[in-house]
Length: 109
Length: 109
Image (cartoon, rainbow over all chains, first blue to last red; front, side, top):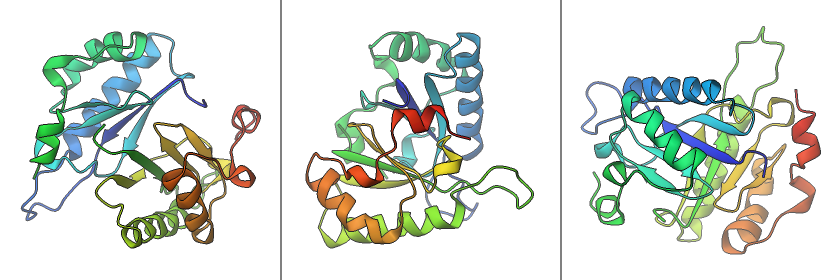
């Protein structure tokens, strides 16, 4: 595995007139928080916080997915990032209050 | 798992004066080929061909990674896409001629 864990953060930006929400600038802020937290913990060579295009859960963004585990998070803020890193990157758990459920995914807009 | 398989294709665009290569427009063409191939095979609800920012293997692009398996591909062209879908999306194998090795990753630029 090239990276032990690979975090994808949606930073998709839609035009203001779009009927759909987008992660955009809020996603960028979340991504910066991940980059900083990984650097602080000495993980930047083994874990990557990657920009992603639309992850297709626009109404529940900013959205994040962590592979290879396939853990999906919704409405992530920069303040949530240390807890996510502690739980899902250092550990193999899930921050349940932020977890995107399959039912939410199925009813997404 | 929200998607059964999740393909990330680097479309990062660097300015012309950058000393690093980038996947950019070639990555975009590869992404379009994936979207079309998935649609053709009726897989567009279960597999996503996602735009990604820089995947950190700039000298070996366009680069692609498929999760949850964590299969990395280098120098992918649109012509390679049907074989990748057949092998790594329909099947669980690897197109070895395109595989990015750990050694190549370690010596990337």
